[in-house]
Length: 526
Image (tube, rainbow, N blue to C red):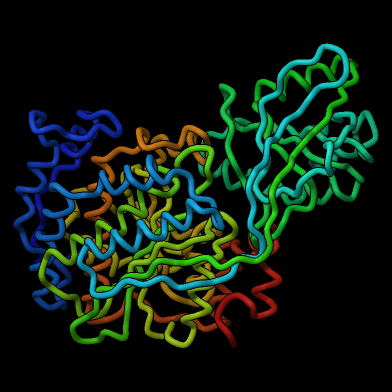
């Protein structure tokens, strides 16, 4: 809700888009290059905030924006995380180095306090020397990787016939040309184009795995959803447990060649070796930093992103750029010299890729103080420009968000959605009844590189990342500064109604999270 008393920063959206196109996606500016953000930074002198808030917000806004759009260690922090540490699988030595990176980054940002919080993951995993050898006539090289958290095959691998299972739905299983028992199933896919397609990919997998297991299949080969031999890493469950069957992702072109051979009536027999290394329960860490509020330090806003990633690439878009954003947002707020009314907690979560394990652990460990949590703001969609926020079904929090972002009104950050979904670290805050916001971002190049070997530093748009940092820092400061919360904490009954209204209950049932909600292991207690 806009106020006629609120000034605007005259930052042209057209100018932003022009600036974004003036640079290559991840080119850093040299001293001789024009600064595409200079005009926006110079314009950050107007004051704007909610009319019922103190002058702290109005004074902080231009300083936050100027710092975010100016010279900063953001790009170098991201380079160290991606190029030097690389992919960061939960439970791996690289993840431990990433935690140390996060602690050092927050200390350099000037926060009041930073620490790590331990939790336990049920299984650790790493890939061995995965391979498929075609044993029947007309062999060819097959490019593939293990599905994450897939069990290892027995020593020497699995030797079996490949059976084409189509898309793996009930009708496909009913029409199998050869018995599934004892076979390795080839499951087809559509080419991934959108975030909706990605959600469908995740939602499809559990039922296919259940059918394959019930039919007596020994393993599953998933056709890659990407063209041009691109391989990626997925997990198909949401609780961090080991998968039911050995599974691999096969390069799309190779999988289609296998399918053509089978369609021509040729027998395809293979040996599949997945010598994955499986470990028992292990401690992991979230990185938690805080800038304490001046009046109500026990009340807080969370600004978070996940730090872990898959390791075929270096986890730049998912989600290194936003981990760096959270640290930079803390720095930009610190540099104002001002404190919001309430505290801001900046959190880098571990274990997100295994089912939001770190954020679940955080809400469990801090359950006694969640009545004092005003909001959880999460970034997890690469470096595409922020267009608004997904509000988790909470229409009533939208006016406060628009007031918070009033200084950036001309940026067009108003395309909010009211959907609720699982798949990132807002879920457990939502299940605890806390207002939660997930940044809606332009897809840009996020989907083609999602979890893939191509997810590297050069794919990050640093101009957009700076703009998004300004959004994140200003929003977190303003929500913490507001005289009144964005919305109340929902009761368990209200949360249950929201799950049904948004359809999140169906997603949770498909992903086998519903039982933990019903049993009280997850979500607000009655």
